[in-house]
Image (cartoon, rainbow, N blue to C red; front, side):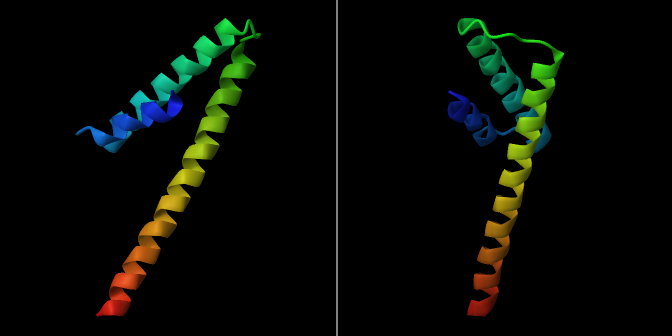
Length: 79
């Protein structure tokens, strides 16, 4: 379901708004899973979710940036 939350980036929203909506959906889904599985949820858990989200977001941005640079390089090589 978290992957489906990524569809929010397909809408005509600004990147920051889409990112906040995606984060809210992701946190909501994590909260539901914690509740269903009767796991302990406290401030430390919330901080861990935020840190993990930021790490994954940062890695995805780096990966996308590398892809864009590689594509631009190939386009420049064709000229």
